[in-house]
Amino acid sequence: MLRDRVVVVGVSGGIAAYRACELVRRLRDRGATVVVAMTRAAGEFVTPLTFQALSGNPVVSELWGDQRPRFDLPLESLGKVRGHVEHVDVAEVADAVVLAPTTADLMARLVHGEAPDALTSLVLATTAPLVIAPAMDLNMWQADATQSNARTLRARGFRFVGPDSGPLASGLAGPGRLAEVGAIVDEVDAALRLRTSMKGMRVLIGAGRTEEPLDPVRVLTNRSSGRMGLALAEAARDRGAEVIVVTGPVSVDMPHGVSVVPVMTALQMERAMAGHAGKATVVIMAAAVADYRPAKLATQKLKRDNASLNVPLVANPDILAGLGAAKRKGQTVVGFALETQNGIANARKKLEAKNADLIVLNTPEAGIGGGTNTVTLVEARSTVELPESSKREVAERILDRVLELRGDTAKSPKLKLTKPTAARRAARKSR
Ligand SMILES: Cc1cc2nc3c(=O)[nH]c(=O)nc-3n(C[C@H](O)[C@H](O)[C@H](O)COP(=O)(O)O)c2cc1C
Image (tube, rainbow, N blue to C red; front, side, top):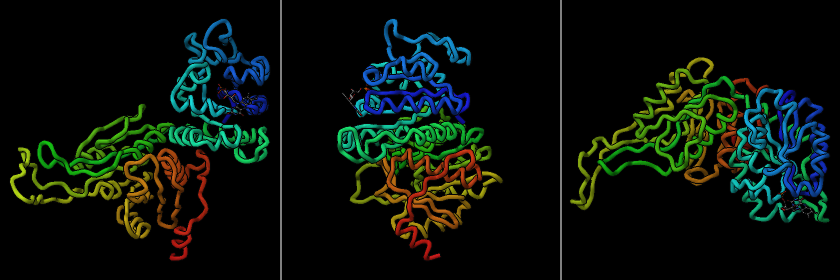
């Protein structure tokens, strides 16, 4: 996958910067065109000249002045370089960006979208997949700020490799070592594979909550933020899929690069999902749809005239069941279940009743509203409990599984399954 791909190696100022030399060599050995972008601090450890010689390309290290690189060959010969703003040009031609080593400082700048130097500007300007290999002292890695930064970057789709554990330059031992160069190369390769793993597929996602109007100002709804559905949309987009999101109100920004169909009520969502499902390869119903809606919509605002108010409700359509019933050959249907008791048994019932291929089970404490989720993937013959992770990471695991179910695993990296948990072992025993 690396052959003829443009890989940017971003080097920041840590002791492990010298190992980026080996990384450049190994990427080139695998056929990649490599451009090194480095911070000033990195230049204190390894000179730009070394990276220029190893990569065979000018090094991106300065935003200003004479040291800005001039790309004659081979980037221009790839026919991709358009303008004359080097860090943006390189950001655009990059098929992947790998930051190795990544300092604690660089991670902090990335989290805040700061771009004071050529490397951070390039990272902001690229849409290529980003692999990040941190390397630092044990305490720096374990500092709350760094851990929080790592969580944020993971949630944004950065792929972490390492840090490994072992003796560190500071004399301490523990996590902080740059990952093995081979593992970093493999991760770049996986990121490139992933990028096209859903190419040619149309993915339809139901997201957000529905709002069922009671009167002109009041609605019946729930606390879903829409984050899970939108994380799925981002992950599918980044794998090359054409993504359509039918979404009720959400509490977060819509991802770019996906088609958005806004709806408000369950009835509108049902119509929109059914309308787009026919041409979808994968249908994921992650929306929190109100089970009931007020039987009558009051035309005027309801007054507080009485001590109590009875609002008759009628059941909304079961959107997932409708999608499952209409499932066509070769289509994969995924539903979500939020259960407060007998989760796995109920999810499995739902799987069968709705003709779904996979049910993602979560609990209200684990998923609603927050940035992380703890889910169990429930299928006819297996359950896989995933550890608490950012919604983006959960989305990636769900899509990995979807591809496995479709038999497209060759195109996607293997699903990293967690060790069987007590719940999984119990479920196995009960079979
Ligand atoms: C000798 C030396 C070694 C360093 N090693 C590391 C390191 O391994 N990891 C790290 O995060 N910072 C390390 N630092 C601190 C960074 O160089 C410093 O935070 C710098 O601002 C990073 O800049 P950059 O992110 O732009 O490269 C080291 C500093 C010195 C002087």
